[in-house]
Image (cartoon, rainbow, N blue to C red):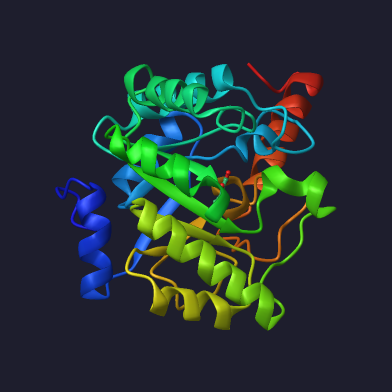
Length: 262
Ligand code: KIV
């Protein structure tokens, strides 16, 4: 990315039309946001994965609006000019539209988010339309939905049968019609990611949906090798920060113990 280019929802549309890929990464704090933005990543997602990668929860379900606002404010302080997306926590948008609109409004007004993300296809498209109608850009998220692990019975790849691939296409078309500026596609066969990308007009951002999507999103802690509980299949590790971190702190602790630290 040209570091002087200000990313907006129009950038997403332009990139797809020009066949240029979009990079997105999750960030949860100010210093990481500053580094990722200056490194040229197009968009920063304050993903609810932070519930697990940073806050130590077992899944994303306990994550709250207050936690999301707290971290998004930090990201905004670290990268004032970045395109920042606020991931709506579980049950912050499902109870009723009024509550969803109020919470999305807080993301923009209090935390300075440029857009919100919410999980679901056809089922949430009426809400997407309302949010966009109020002036709040929405990034949709279809395929594997981590906020639905209880009803799905775990983290399951989607789109493995022709019927399920058709359902995903219907979801993708619905969120596009509702006005989402792009959609995340999570965990589906590469051919399904490609088929969806070719059949909708908004950019598709893959996390485990193959190389033919219009962009990619990765969880920062996976990419840096900092999340050691488990490594999802779609994670691409670019560094071993967990190991380096442990070695550094072990050396420090040893130095103090042995009196070498002065
Ligand atoms: O919370 C998250 O990290 C996400 C992904 C799309 C990366 O939703």
